Image (cartoon, rainbow, N blue to C red; front, top):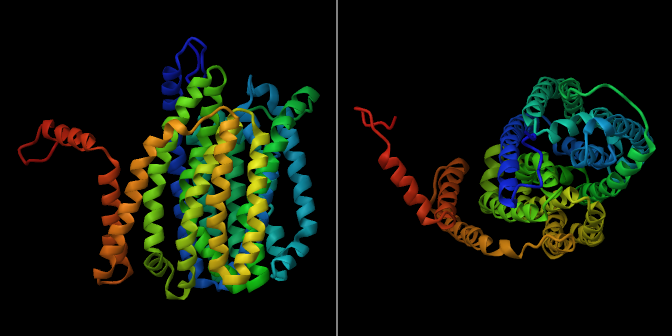
Length: 502
């Protein structure tokens, strides 16, 4: 009997989608659980440090974070995704892939160690250079564990990845707050993340059940680099897209303004970081298995996935946009008020990022990594000047507005075009997107109408207005037949003598 993740030519498209979908679904549940735990830990750390550190400390950390995010996207030169997408036995490519990933991550870290002072100065925060050098240590760990992560993702063993990341987050929690209490400033963030990465890396390396072998087979290396170099280039441009604003804002407005901006961007990143990362853990593997034999299976999988993703993220985006001020005030305090206007605008980018990330996963599963380069390059060409202009005209709100406009007018059309050229049409998904779009519009109106009548502070506004918006979205989007089915199911359930369903 074939492995559940494998696709056999005899199966129909529907059978392939269903079988692989079940495997990916189990992996997604574990990924969501792990991401929720790690994001909850990061959120808790952020709440503590926001009260111990200054906006300038956050600004210094933002510079180091931008550098790390960029190199993390390119340091394994695409070997994680290459291993997941590899057609054949992973054991055949693992020694060569591991060698390439380790060599390139060491090279990248050395380059960035040398460039850290210049990078920090360019961002208007020269004191951040040592923090950059410390935080970027995580790329060495990522390079060493790249093929092991690939193996776990390919086998849909997200449960093991989840355990490793959660334990790593606990190490982060154990290190960062004490450093902050000791007066370490921005080093608190960096030290905690490095400690967590080391713990997670050790666990992943041992859990992957791969022999520790390093080799360099020319033919295998050629195939891996043909796939990985364009993908790494694309992800490098993506990192530039998501972190160029830190450099531009810091250079133009200083560390304090950058701290406000970073806080808003971090909140807007909750959904992409939680749901988007979890989806990516399984989507490349799932789409790759579907694309191996039957193109119709991949098309069907895309038609099912896109409406579900949109329905999941739109209500959260609406709540964040309409309730940005009480959300920031409740979580972080009045002193972070300037972040609310930025967050309100960045929710647009949040939605677009989720959709473009799914596009990248689909293209990678098809081996069309060159298309991802052109998509991100076109996005970057439009974004960099827009960010510079927006920041100088309207400060941190202008930077956020530039992000949103370019995401909608440039990134989305390029993503649709890239998928069309790869043979994946999104036209069949359009009817399924009408209800989520209508639900988002109606829920936003309801929240704005309910909000002025609520007394009791930001928490009450979040609960009452946010709850009303979520309920409205569900009533509009979920078909009436589903509610009737639920009511019938509840009515058929036997009740105990106390009247409680068993």
